[in-house]
Image (cartoon, rainbow, N blue to C red):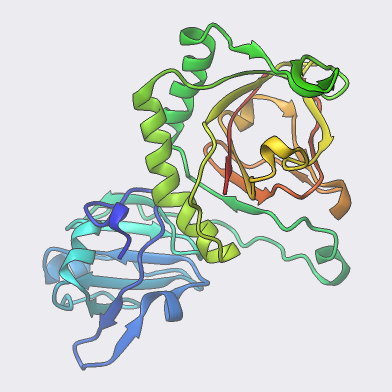
Length: 314
């Protein structure tokens, strides 16, 4: 069980694996048998509450869970017993929605006042459409909206907007920092608030690092300091580059960037020119993770200011 999530789980957390046991003795493993489709998960306090659960739409898996298999589940629901510690992480008397990756999205108190909607299916890419897509990982909900706003305020208010971002250049045989608008234009700062730094670290530990381990089979043991970034309107960009080409950064394995205000600017997307024309702009609070060896750019911001947090993992 994920220790970071064992006390209480929040929207954005991926459900730890667990064995589910039906009243007839049949058992199932959550990750092996219930991933790949949207999930409704309920923890009713009694049979009356279980009987009032709404019928799940087609394509949605619906299960009731408890320390013992709940009785009286409504049509379309299956009832299972699970480890009491796992159930405690969900809470009692709640209705949870999870995505096909078993990532918790939202919860409501039972009985429901409003039946939740299910996101429309995404049209799949087919054939040649899947060839030119960069091998990147996007992780939704790593930072909550409130944390994103706090980080923007910290950059602009507490840190007075940050400093103009510089690059390392060789001069007279020595490496020196120098502003070079031919390479990038942005403002940046290392956070100066220990509590914000700790909150970001905790969110990466419980939401990003386990997903990186699962997708890339890589265990993160080292993290560079967090940086808060601002790409201003008509003046923010980072030309195509790699993140581990010089000796001082050769240790880097993965870059991680979290968009802090995705809907409030246009432009500013990531592009990986070696892998086609596709543009990547994860929603607010989502992380984009990719190998530091990939050539990538941040395209010019056309409207608004793009705020982001970035770090490097090894």
